[in-house]
Length: 61
Image (cartoon, rainbow, N blue to C red):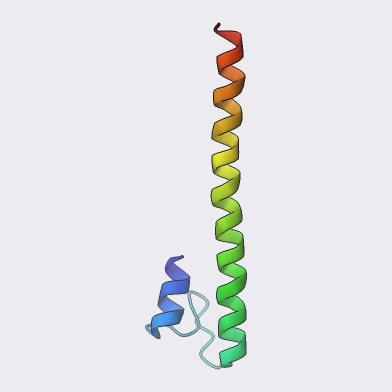
């Protein structure tokens, strides 16, 4: 998300890679893809924690 903020605010238009000559469409496509994967990572982490809590709870009753 840091890369998204850098790109959206114009601080570093090319993000961490530093590709200065990207078009506006490439900028927004990159933001969309990065956001999609970030949300996926958050959901995977929440699902993993939930799974471990439920698995652990069944063994200790």
